Every structure is written in structure tokens, then in C-alpha cells.
Image 1 (tube, rainbow, N blue to C red):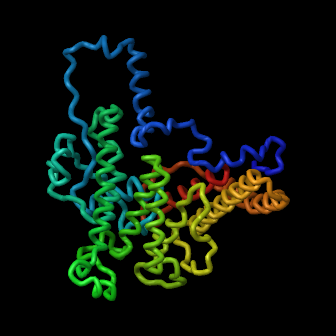
Image 2 (cartoon, rainbow, N blue to C red; image 1 turned 60 degrees about the horizontal axis):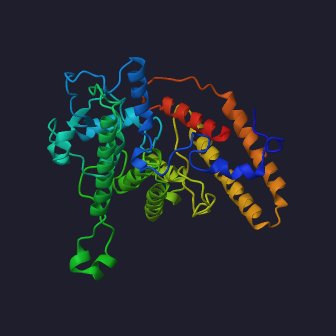
Length: 390
């Protein structure tokens, strides 16, 4: 049932809490280091198993075999990394164009903790080492996915090792972005560096349909999600998203209009995914800025998926801005006669969107990502539905 702003149970003084990060979820203990916020998700189940078996750490036999060293998921080539991206990331965060071919069976390698201490380059399973911003950013997310051969993946020691490995990849991503943006003349001839063109990476592109110059934007977007969803660091999330936004506008990704070309879809996704990352603070730039002329991305199996997802995002942003304005009016005791009219306006926008979302089938699907991206369309609509009903 659509939300009714006129509901008697709706309290204005509670409205600001609806837009805070994690609203509606159990309260987290933010006094802890952000790297440990989610540890209870894993340790609680382990403790439950111990109690159900009538055992305790003190009562376990000392002769139990020592557990193997924790391992982390890594990959042996760019091709395997790209394949894993389409398996684990793309269905929920489709920042790259559709796959050129359907993903094959995931082929993860592993790095034991003892090898990690020697550095990334000591991977005993492969000589390959991700080095570009986009491969390192993708490795950041994939390192958090338990390896199928890790029999103790829920053990706190294993969880912590995966998170430390992911953070190491994230730091390497930022270093790689800095390296690729460095101008050689900056040290020897700063004046020449000022008048020269932007540096370009001298390597092969990661994806055949993605130009090298926007890979750093995509990497920053992935790190923005990592900082928010994994580390709970709102400040860094906004910093990474802001860096991606500025870089995207410097490349004119926002003003592509109807421009086509082989990289058109990649540029559209990189730009509009910048706009899909918002928080409970006023936007730096209006989403309705007339300079933003780039067309929405597209999905061949469902042309309405992207427009609806982004419309839902923009509506939630408008509702967030309204709550912020209303909260400010209450604090300053200024004239808030516009509140009712603004609520009615938002209601008239939300109701049709909710009706459309509720009319769709949201049956889960285990099908893999292919060039039609049917599973991606379903995910985008489901995400939009959750946002609108939040």
C-alpha cells in the first residue's frame, strides 16, 4: 500500500531519522572501529553452534587439529577477474557494459595469510598481479567473498583476514589512480605540464567496450560502495563518490547527449552510476542541472529498467531534501506553511512509481548475467522498489 503522508501515525519529529544511514536496521555500535562493525554477524552463529553442542572453548580437547591458515580469493588473469565481476558484482552494481560473452565457471585462486604478509606479489598460485585501478577495485570487492575451499570461512580470523586483504586492495587502487594521473613533466618542467594534455595510461583496456580513461572513474565508484557497505565510512564514501563525479565531469561524461559510438554505453553507465550514489546530505550539484544531457543507460531485455531505477533514486533524493528542509524549519522555528503542499507534491510523484513497482513480478532468478542482462533488469527494479517503500 502506498505510503500516506497524511497518516495519523506519521510524526514530523521522527521524519529526520528515516534518512539517516542504516535507518530501519538494528543500531550499530559506532564506537567500534568500522572494520569490526559486522564481525558479530559471523561470531554469533559460531557461539550458537558451540552452545547447542554443549561445548565451550574451555571444554574442547587440546588434541583438536590446528585449523589451516585463512585464505583470500584472488585471480590469475584479467579475464578471470572480469568473469568474476559479472558473476558477483554486475547483477547488483552494473557499472560496466553487458558482457561480451556469458560468464563461465568462476575460477578463483587463493592466497594464504602467511603469503599475504610478504606482499601481493607473493601469490603462490599465480604470477599475475592486478595493477590497474579497475582490476584492483574489483579485487577489493571479490576479496570479501569467501573462497569455496575455505572450510572455516565464517571464523572471525578468516573474516578479518578477508577484510584486511580487501582494504589493502583498496589502498592499492588509490595508489594506482595517482600513478596513472601523474604527468612526467611535473617534476622537470611544471610549465610544460600545465599546458600539456592529460596523461593516458599505456596499457590494454580491461574491457573491450570500456575506454581506458574512464576506468579510474569506475574504480572510484566501486570503492565508494566498498567504503559504505563494508566499512561503514560515510565520509570516505562521499569522498570517493565526489572524486568520481569530478573526474566524470572533467571527461564530459555528463554532456554526451545522444552521442553513440562503441563506448557510448560505458560512458552512460559510468556517469549515471555517479548519480546513483547519494547520502543523507544535500547534493553538491542539482540532479536537474541543465548541463546533464547524457542519455540513460539501456538494457536490451527491459528498456524501462534503468529509467525507473534512476527515477526512483531521484525521487528519494527529493524526499531526502524535503526532510532536511523540514527539519531545519523545525529547528529554527521558521515559517513552514509549505510543508503540507510539498508533502502532497511528493505523494503525487511516489504513488505512481509505487504502483508500477508493485505491478512487476519480483520472483528471484538464479540465471547468470548474459548480454540481455535480464537478471540485471530484475535487480534494478527490485532495488528501486525497496528504495520507494523504505
